[in-house]
Length: 94
Image 1 (cartoon, rainbow, N blue to C red):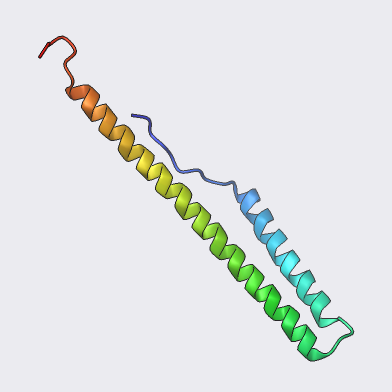
Image 2: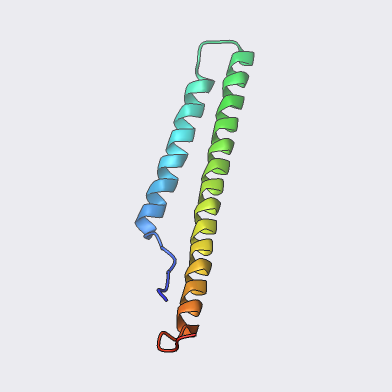
C-alpha cells in the first residue's frame, strides 16, 4: 500500500499568502473608507467585503474537506482490494 504523506507548504509560501490576503483586505477597506459617498453606501460595501471574505473561507474549507474525504475513501477502497487480493489463492480451484 502506498503511503500518502501530508503536504507541507514552505514558510515563504505561507508568509506570501497571508501578506497578500492582508494587503488585499487592507487596500479594499481603505478604498471603501475613502469613497466620496454616504456612510450607508460605505457600510453596505463593507458588509459585502466581510461576507465575501467569510464565504471564501467557507468555500475553501468545504473544498478541502471534500478532497480529504475522497482521499480517505480511496485509501479505504484500496485497502479492501489489497486485503481481498492477499486472501485470494490463485492456485486452488474451487
